[in-house]
Length: 199
Image (cartoon, rainbow, N blue to C red):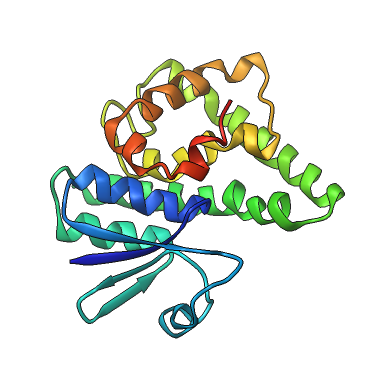
């Protein structure tokens, strides 16, 4: 059985939990106290961070790598596009999410007030840029729910928690977020600590 070492408030762990619930398979989630990490975490992941997936002899870390592995092992429902061109585009989007959105999360959570405010502004600007996409399509890549929707969902869920206010022009993005939040797998993947992050 797969085991996921997961932080109860970690957006990257949240991604992996969503994928596990989407697949509807047997797995075990091991909650990790991020302020008092178990010693074996540093043995499994040289960066001493969650999430970490253990599947028999395989140990993986980094949420996008973990999620692609789960998607390859349990292809139904498939979350990465089957077509190589679309798959490459999806990977590029995932890379951009890391660079333009999630790279700023640390500054909000642990940075100075000035760094946190700058990070909020950068995330806000990036989200406003992608909002118009959802006037034309249901999900990030079209009509199908994919790994891109999984990847961005934890950030959208935490906007209130991170103090990020979006203007009215981002309304299509917020409607899209509500679609994702209503999925049973998303709801099941929320920890009690995450449930209270959103007003």
